[in-house]
Image (cartoon, rainbow, N blue to C red; front, side):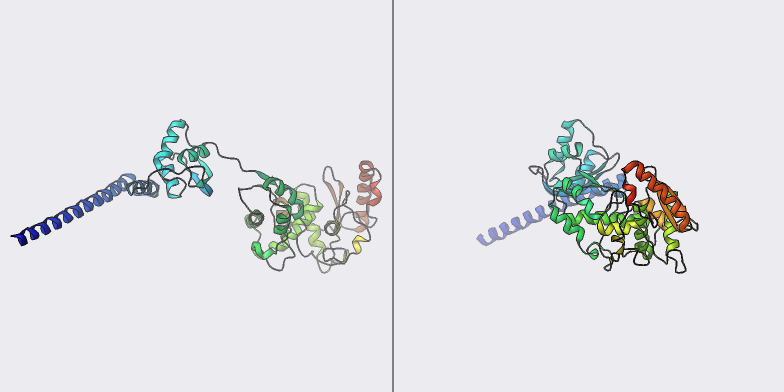
Length: 386
């Protein structure tokens, strides 16, 4: 009889295990059916995938709340018309919050709606901290690079906003061009930093900031329709146009034409030399009246376009979009010379002969005499600007 009781006990335990297994299977089927039902009701589209993940996470026990304001950075987009539940589930998926309920409770208590937009949150935030940051996003500090700036002129602005050491910023700006995806034979990244206003993210390095600026310039060149094989030439000419012209877009296109005319092999007027004061100033630093001395114009630097034919080795500043477009699409005309006779207004006069150009130079010298108390003596006797 004892053996029969033992068999009976074994049968009972076996049956209990089977019953428990069947219950687990039924629960899983119920969850699966629920998810399928929500998919059908929601149209089985992408918009329901986020909420489903959040629901699935809660069903598998992913509940509770993190403490504090979190760490790191997570980019979050709140779409127009998105519900609090949709946003909460997206935050769960991205590891911002641990579960939906604490976030939704905090959102309900705040009484405010979430505004659509892109936000920077942190990993492992409490639900209430995430709500506060979404409703009161921290404005990122910004710095601005004006058109025509040289790379080292950007250091103070980047340092002031980012707090990064000056030495680290200079090192990033002096890094080899290939570090930023640029051609290895460029003399530097000069000119490849797009002039614009930039936001500085928390913990962003100097290298990352510079890379963003380089990427913006690459995008600007592409958007302007500049072919990849022409970008270096166009950007170099654009930097000269930027430095030489305070005028409007039409004036810049004419200046770009002057440079192209001077670069022609059969040009007897200037023997193929650009003779741009801007390139000499790049070597020695800009003077108040943008003129250069005879000694400076004798420099052996490859950037000295009085001594060397053709374009300099690379850009001399960061040109704006107007100068880039002007360099890529210059005006038609026979001009060989130009001088800005009134730097305040940008009024520029063009000439086809050196004799005609000298008359315009005298007008520029007169402007200098009136506005700079004798600095007119610094203006070159042999041609003024370009």
